[in-house]
Image (tube, rainbow, N blue to C red; front, side):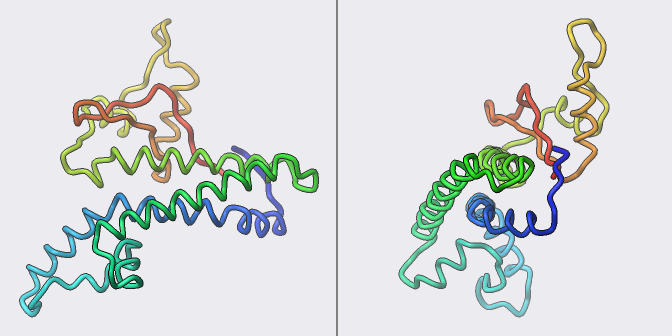
Length: 198
């Protein structure tokens, strides 16, 4: 995005975006719970000294919510997590609306705050459809080639278009998430791409 934020603006951004980051962390934990729990179970079964499944070292909000609210089972903790995600997202949407009219904030700070709302949506789509969290989903060969930078989408003229070159560049950055959609438990790349640069 090429944004420039001063040190005071970065501190302000941290305050403004806190609900967004809470929502992002909770989304990740909600959708990675099944995988993380399976891994903890497998680890416990492989540990000769273990008498039972010990997930006390799990760093997942679902587990934390179950511990904080003794009456909650997994399903209850997942539902509470969803409620908290909605609350933080709603709070953040209001913050985004408020900063749009705040003349005391720089244009770059407003853009950063506004752009982060798209990360919430993008991460939700990613978490719900990525092979990392869903072993029954896999990337297509075309996607794997894209990730390796082998295949570039081409314009109708038959030459790589500038958007394709940007996608290829972004794919080399391991922090970039490709927007994907699930289809018949296989995944295909969405037509657009949004990189993350701040």
